[in-house]
Image (cartoon, rainbow, N blue to C red; front, side, top):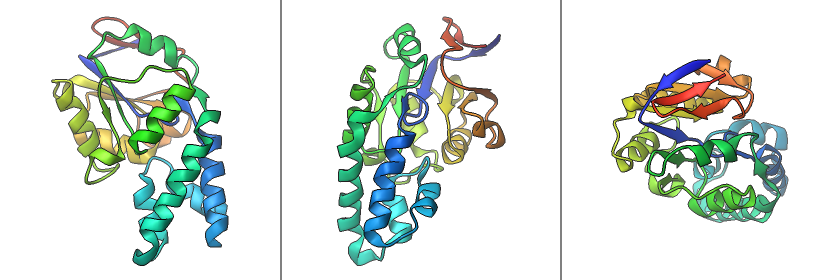
Length: 209
């Protein structure tokens, strides 16, 4: 087992705490078809990024507000279908209050809907797409979450599943990055796990099997 010493833990939401991959794909494929875009190509661009950033890349400025509202609606309509990543509930229950936060590229309403659908607790500190000027891979979200926990980013461990998120955590100065899912190894995580069943809070930090 590997001990990652830290004073707090910063979690991405989708793909780390909640298994929302199928829900995300359904919503974005529906949106892409509405706009006459290739659903597969669109779905490849959205992982780890704010919906506003994806819409801005694909839609002319005059239509961006309308199309952002559309994808936000589609994702909320599908939020009830998500479940928890294996081990997420147990890990969150073991970490003391005020020692963990969620940093997500989703909007606040969507993040809360997915966490509740998965039966997971709502964090005291949640930094969403609504709270930052720049989304991942910019470090703003992780820096803000650490600050709200009263920590330096260098004393926190981040759990992420996407390249954009891992780059954001690295740029923020996180002490270590635990990647969730096999792709995370190629994306630069320090330690990689399949799910959270092998991750445990141990007082001085996280133990990773």
